Length: 117
Image (cartoon, rainbow, N blue to C red; front, top):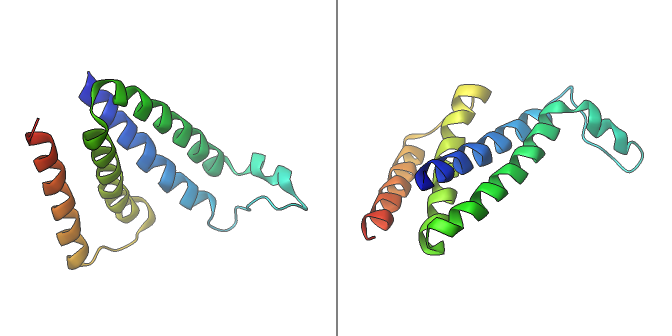
């Protein structure tokens, strides 16, 4: 169950990042002091903000079950790797070979961190 909470936190965090990026793309508008209410028309941005709140809550719950030196690197590296792949799949962005190498090192680091428990 504790790993499911952490994985759900990673998924929430990564999804929030992608939704906020989508919310910042034209024709959607970002709120300004002159027009703050436009935020309520930007559904992806609102959902992204909501998912960041959910991710924070799941992270807090995960800290009940994991030491900080495991939970934080797992959540952070997991979210970075997930965002990298989602940015390709959803937004059509590209990953260079060096980026795959970096992601591989992050995943290896996360495995090594958790294997020491």
